[in-house]
Amino acid sequence: TIGMRNAELSLGLGLLYSPQEALSIGLVDKVLPADAVVPNALEEAARWANIPAQARVSSKLLTRQEYIDELEATRAKDNEAFCSFITSDKVQMDLGKYLERLKRKKK
Image (cartoon, one colour):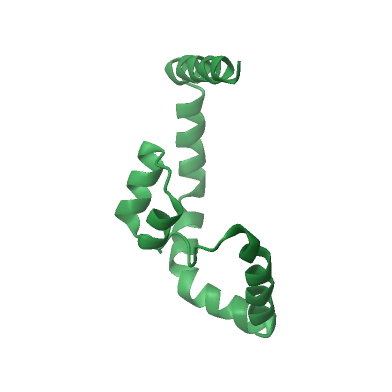
């Protein structure tokens, strides 16, 4: 994983990473030439397909259950906070301005 601080910076600042930067912070596992992506993906999928599905699901849940529980415990509060934020007049006005800038970029 890229770690909480890198995730916070990436999301907060809307950072984009070059392939090498993404590799160096652990955002991707490999950087490949375009013609090697599909063959490599097929090989990787075959490796994962050899692991029994129930074992894969169980191990993922085992390592992530703490985070899942925390997300579920705060879901209603998070939804309320997000809806309150996103529907505020200020945010709606800022989103409108942002969309207008995007429209002008396309032209």
